[in-house]
Length: 308
Image (cartoon, rainbow, N blue to C red):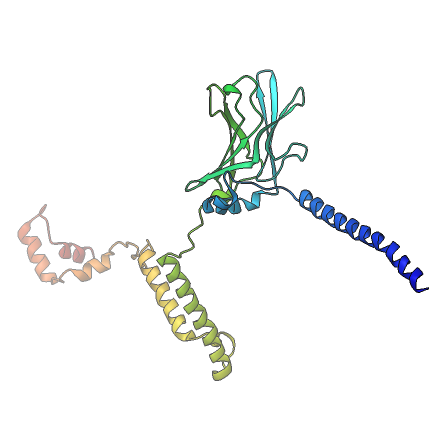
């Protein structure tokens, strides 16, 4: 039994080794499939260890746009084209590293304008310029050089995803031809200044003091003094008097009509006129009448006395 069992173990040993190798190959295949299954991202121009930190930071700033797709339709004469664009993602897995793809509306031919494995990025105060190089070569323009896409992303805090448009194509020179696209996005905007102005600080402070005064005074009047109703309001009598004084001041300053209307006009009666004049004697009036003669004028008091 001993030698036989030893020979059995010797025959099983190659099988175990083969199974171990098979499992190792299967694990490697799974790792490679997982790596290929993940979406590719932008690869900046230059060696990996010499890439610009500024460009890396700008790519992180574009992170909110990396899950979206943008497209625009362009009509040129009898031709119409559709341009599709993704930020640091492949437009189509069938077109390797494709960042911007042109589709001919008639022939449905697809042309890669720029690839994400040759990316450059530049920024300004309120814009970001994303450049995809390494597109398909021109057929008869620009000395057959490879196409290049320039995407100008401008600051707009209220932008929507339909703002992607094609500005123009430069292909009438021998070198450095390009396609220029434009779009708006909030990712290109500078950080907002969150500092409060002096007026805002004073307003917040004043509002806080008023709130503490009302709430604290209300609790004190209710819990300590035992006031009820409107008396719970702090310094209720003072504010009531102040309101009355303000109302009186407004009434005095703002009213256009006088407060007391003048008395109505009344004529002077004969009895009042007689009382206002000196009262001459009967003998005096008779003497004046005798001296003046007929047709002469007499004092009003004498005339009133004669009429009486």
